[in-house]
Length: 611
Image: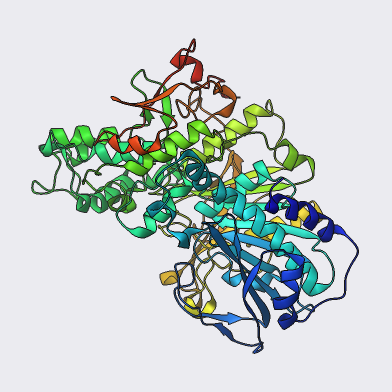
């Protein structure tokens, strides 16, 4: 057993043992080193202005600016070495014992932890080694590649154990309830924690979760760092971008500047499907836009289009391909595409510029083959988490232009199929958010007390209209976990200009899948008076069959790996350095050369049938 594993085993005893005498904040600096062998604290200080505490960061990606409006709290930060060449940081912010709700909340994804002290949590987060810039260093050897793939999921677990230990030392007793709250990469980490470490959390709030997405946008250091989390979405990301970056037919490329105009036309066509014209497509899966309205020479040309900005027939073919789910060469479903209504954000995803050689993508692809299941979060077996009473609250913006919202619907159906259509409603709830982009933004109501809330002095976007479970997703999750009251619905708000001080532009009823909000007439801006919920769609069979064609489902992957073949480039799986010879236009239709195994044997063919 390695040192870290030994420490975690001992810490579990410490966490759930008898209460100890509480420590003051400055004592944590010294005593934490005795509790956690090898820990290197870098901060232990008290912010003492209870009315308007402002945290001034040293400066990094997670904390780029001062954070105001915080209550009095004890800030503890430390580093921990996971090997001789790698380490991670974590911080725990501990409110005064009179304000503590006897809970610990962990989260990730931008500024997820900043406002959570208002709930009374002891709040923790981690940099998951991102400041290490591992991609610049981990360029040889399978062990290093495994570390790059596995640590992003191990570190949140280690940080959770450490944070609980610090909280127990500070308050003199163990936390009673523990939550993960995060969006995007934080959403994926939360669900992965429920899959791998079901004992860590009682409730998980996971927004716009990434499934197997590497950032193929490696155009900046930030995206390069982020790529370690997602070794598979590179497939769809590269695919959809290459649809609009085909150098062999330059006349088919759609300029990214066109997508804003396209979005206006699509919304106009499908806005009234819910019975009200409000600029929001409630259920984009029902939207079947007439794309001929943006084509040059159309007899029914859109009012937003003229003969100078219309699409040629070649460009129209490209557009139709973008709206089509990604499939393999033999027609197997691989990944859902973006929904109608998300076009406003496509310029950041469908750039029209082809990606260059993607050496690192090969690393993570091979890493997932040699260490399957460690870098994805699609395991449907949540039985251990649910079995101990865990609750999963998931949400996704229907107009997400970065991660197709259909991927969350797919995972829900995948879990439902695994549980053989058992009623999951008291264990797992998925809320699809009409008109909402990636975690927030878009024309829809995007403030509901979830991850990513801004402080009031920063505009207050994301914060709930009312600090009650009906309006606040985190409070609703706490009620669900601690009182057994599952949320029947939620009410989200869209603030004027994204600023809570300017009041509500409108509210919208949010319903758990497979229900959706139905307009009943009256003032469409008032959720309580004009909208009701009804089961409109469960599954139309859209997700039947295959999700990812190879290597992601550990249940179907044989252990006797021979070679990994990447398109026309074939290399021994143990020789990572040769992976730099990956094809210039990479698409992850990977074939495995395995003795006695047909490629079709690697496909997951368990169907997800409509009820």
